[in-house]
Image 1: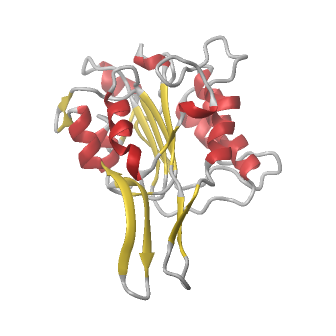
Image 2: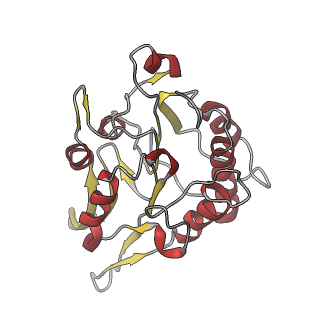
Length: 245
């Protein structure tokens, strides 16, 4: 069942060497994403942990490291009915996830690798009021991913907050999207930030409502230095639980 599985992906940090003009990429989100998977979504002590990678369980290679050369594979994975949940950690904007390198001196973009809301919507078949493959729960941790609503709608999720009853009255399965409504910096302490993310994911995975555990994750971390940012918001069913109809 797709509801039992999470697709998980991370982006890269891109940078420009101003002396040589070379563009470089660093996989610096690896540790945070691994911690979320190991101690949150797929924590083996759960009665019912999530599975990754088409049910093969968690290992280092079962999250996507999004790069230019695997974009087609990434889109095909999202389109698979094996998945109804998705967590992204990386760069973003109101209309896409991915990364880009911009030379402000030359006023031009040197490198860009992204997946747009239009591409996701087209691949999943979620357009207008037609939902071919709506997702259950999507968390796009990237700047401004909740701004404008294009990305939430691409996954078949409303671009405004409602309750679970909104969907039940319409005979549809409830679904929710978490994104950031503005630009957000990643704190220095990756371990503390991963802890805050897992307050959300553990609470959700064990049956709690999203809005409660997002609020808690915004205020708590081991030293209270790296909670989730206030920019994180829920669109769709704010009170969604893992077992919601």
